[in-house]
Structure formats: C-alpha cells, structure tokens
Amino acid sequence: MIKESGSSNFWISYADLMAGLLFVFILLIGAIIVKSSILKRSLESKSEILEEKSITISQKDMVIVELKRLLKVRDEDLKILSSKLKDRDERLSNLNREIIILTDELNRSSDEIVRLGDIINSSELKYSNLVERFQAQREKIKYLTGIKLKVISKLKEALGEKIDIDREDGALRLSSNILFDKGSATLKDGAKSELKSIFINYIKTLISDGDIKKHLDSIVIEGHTDSDGSFLYNLELSQKRAYAVMNYLLTLNYIKQQNIKSKLVASGRSYLNPIMVNGAEDKDASRRIEIKFRLKNQEAMEEIEKILD
Image 1 (cartoon, one colour):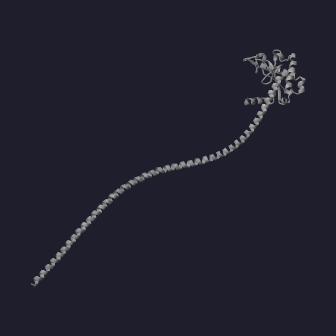
Image 2: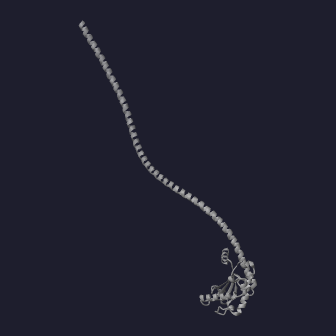
Image 3: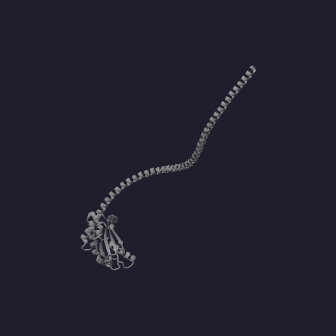
C-alpha cells in the first residue's frame, strides 16, 4: 500500500509539473504571439512611416532637382547679368573718361570765354572810341560839305549870270569853240582876255573867304571832247587844251600875287564825261574846258557822303 501510494504521488507531482510547464509554455507562446503581434504592428507602423518618409524624400528629391534647375537658370541669369554689368562698367568707364575730357574742354572753353569776354570788352571800348571818332568825323564832313555848298552858292552868286556854273560841284564850264579852233590846242587871242576875267573872278570867290581858302586843296583844269574820233586822239587833244589853259593862267600876275601856282592841276578826260541831253550826246556842249575846285580830303568826303546817304 505504501509503494502504490508513493508511485501515485510521483505521477501526481509529475503531472502537476508538466501542467505547470505546459502553462508556462502556453504563457510563453502567448507572450511570443503578443510580442510578435506588437512587433508586427510596430513594423507595419514603421513601414508606413518609412513609406511616408520615402514619399517625402522623393518629393524633396523632386524639389532638389527643381532647385538645381532654378539654380542653373539663376547661374545663367547671373552670368548674363554679370556680362551686362561688365558692359555697363566699361560704358561708365568710357563715360567717365569722356566726362573728364569734356570737363577739360569746358575748362579750356571757360578760359577762352573769359579771354573772348576781355577781347569783347576791349573791342566794345574801341568801338565806342571809333563811334566817337566817327561822329566827330561825320560832323567834320558835314562842316566841309557845308563849306562846299557855301562855295558853290558864292560862285553862282558871283558868276552865275555870266557863265555856266555846275549846280552839283561848282565847276566853271567854258566852251572849247570859244577858246580853240577845231582840232587845235592853241588858245585864241580873242579868248584870253575873257578867260582871264572869268578865271580871276572864280579864284577871288574861292580865296576871299578865309574859311574856304584854308580848306582849298587844288584848282583842276579839265579838257573834255566829244566822241568823234578815237579815244587816244581825244585824250591827247583834251590834255593839250587843259595844259594850254593852265600855261596861260600861270602867266597872270594875279596867280603869282596870290601864290596859288602850286594848286593848279591840268587833266585831259577825252570823251569820258559827255554832256547828255534827252539821252543823246550834246557834242557842242561836250567840247569844253572845266575849271573846278577840290577841297582837302574831298574824295574821302564824297565816299563818306555816299555812305551817309
């Protein structure tokens, strides 16, 4: 009985042990299953996260590619901009050089303007002085012109009724027909006394007024012909006739007494100054001797009178 009881306890203990081990094994299997399930869910979760991260990385890669493209475009734009900036810098440099050159030229121009201003001021002063001198000369010319008109008036008053006195220049006109034979340069004896009287009266009128006498430059005896014959023939004839009249006048005591020998001048004019009537030459009137006076600076006076007119 005792052996059966011991054997029975052994198997009971062994059964309990195996039951305990089975329970532990079941617990271990359960734990493994639970752990496996937890790990699976964790792995699935991490897989999802990895997938999301992979998508994110892929998106980032696309962004990076786009950024690289944009960077490349930007680099190209920067190169273009850099080239433009370089060109601009060159243009600015050239412009600065031009500005420097223009500044130098402006400075020189300013100096030139100042110099020209000084010249202009000096010229204006000279111009003012010239104007003053011109006004003075003008008044002098007017005065001398007044003297000329005064002489002509006196000549017409003294001789106008007896002889032809030109209204413009006061010339005394004597017909060659009275003084000379045709084609001759020898004074007629009968004409000498009349020539003497007329000439002395003409000279007296010129030198009796001291204001006129001091401005008297010369007394011109001019020979004139008509247009018949050649110019040279008439020039020689008119010259000889003018000399014939002057030579006779130089023999007069009155000329010697008044000391006016040096003022007498003879000149032949050929047919350069014909007398025209109604557009045609008056040949009788053209053949003449003219005795005229010239005042000092008369040619200048005549030119200035033309300018003043």
